[in-house]
Image 1 (cartoon, rainbow, N blue to C red):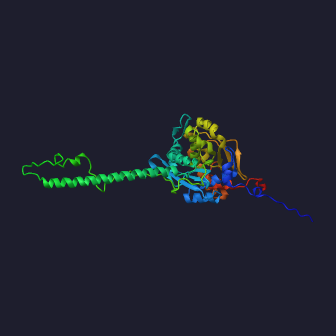
Image 2 (image 1 turned 180 degrees about the vertical axis):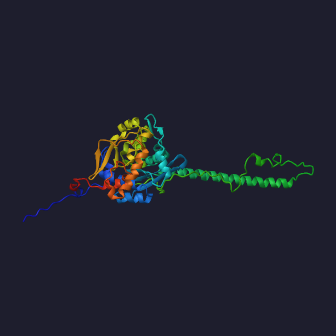
Length: 416
C-alpha cells in the first residue's frame, strides 16, 4: 500500500478575500463574485441602512462604514436615494442607487417623465433619471472627495455642518447681546420719560440724547428685537447617516477602487452618475478609481449620441445584466423617443450570467409591453399556464431573480 501526503500553503488553499478582489481587479474585467456582491447591494438598497450594511458584512465586507443620502421633492417628481459604503480600510467604495419602490408613486412618475434633458453636448437623456441623480450629486461628490482623502465619507459634510453650527452660535450670541442692549435702552427711555413728563399743552422736554422723545415711530422703522426673537440660521441637514465624531481614522486608506451599481431605476442612475464623472475634468480623481458599473434590470437612459460618446468613455466596464424576459431593459418605449443601450450585456442562463453580443431591442409601445408584462406575472403564478409564450415579463424584473442568478456557481469553479 502506498500513502501519499499532499500539502498546500495557506495562499494556495484559500481564495482571495472579496475586499482584496474588489481592490485589485483591473477596470474593464468582469468578475462573477463582484457581480454577486453588487447584485446583493442593489437588492438590499430597498431596505434600511442597517440591513444594507449587515448584508455587505455577511458577504465579506466586514466592519464597513455605510452612509445614506436622500432627496425628495414630490412636485419635481424626485424621490431618490443612494447608499455609499466604505470597506473597513477605506480602499473600497460602493455607490448603490435605490431603484423604483413598488409603492412609491413619485418613483413611477420619475420613470414615465421621459421628456429629454440635454446632457451637455452629448445629446439628450431621460429627464426623470437625470434629475434624480443631479439632486443627490453635490452630497455624492462630497462623500467621494472625503474617501479619496482617506477619510470617512461624511467628513466634508460634517465639517460643513460644524461650520454652520458655529455661525448659528455666533449669530445667536450677537442677537442676544443686541436684545440686551435694546432692553437697557428701553429702561433708560422709561426713566427719562418719568423725569420729563409731557406738559398739559402737549409740549415735553427733549431727552438728553437730542431725540424727539416720541417712541411711536420706532415700531414703524422695523421690528423690535426681544429675548424670544433670536435669529436662527437653521438649514436642512444632509441625510448623512455616519455621525462619527472622528472625521479621519488612522486605519483608513485613500479610496482605491469605486464601484457603482443599482437595480431598475437605480441602474439607470448608476449609468448617468458614471457619465457625469466622465464629462468633467474636475472629477478626474474619481474617474481614476472607478473600476466598474454593474446594473441589474436597468432601462436605457439616452439617445444614440449619448450612447456612442460614453461607450467610448466607460463602455468597457459598464456591465448590464438582463434576467429572462425582463420588460424594463426594453424601456422607455419608442413612443417616448429613441433610446440606445451601450456597454456590455450579460443575460441569465442556467449557468449564471453569460455575455451576450446583441442588446435587447427597445419596445415600441409602452402600454402594450407593460400589459403583456403584467400578464406574464399572472401566468407565472399558475404553472399550468406557462405554455403561453410571452416575451416580456414583470415577474422577471424582481431583484431576487438577479440576486439568485448571481449566486449560481459557474462550471469549472469546483477546481478553484
